[in-house]
Image 1: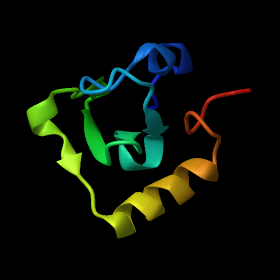
Image 2: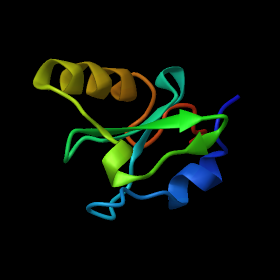
Image 3: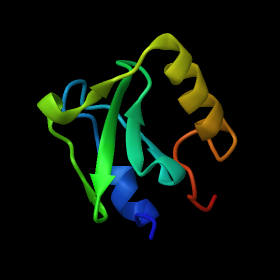
Image 4: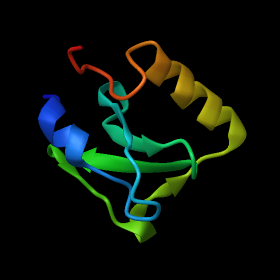
Length: 79
């Protein structure tokens, strides 16, 4: 199941309070500015700073490519 695009649109990173990229295939939300990946469990985003995964440069590039294959803001969002 994917998250509702309207719900994703209001989500923000708890650190910089900016929008996140939704990566449905990864079950994650990603902040490319801080290289923080937040997992989604049972359709619930885990937006706790201490639970975020910091990604390395290689993973950052992969996630950006994955996001750009879908749309600039969220994967699966209808334009």
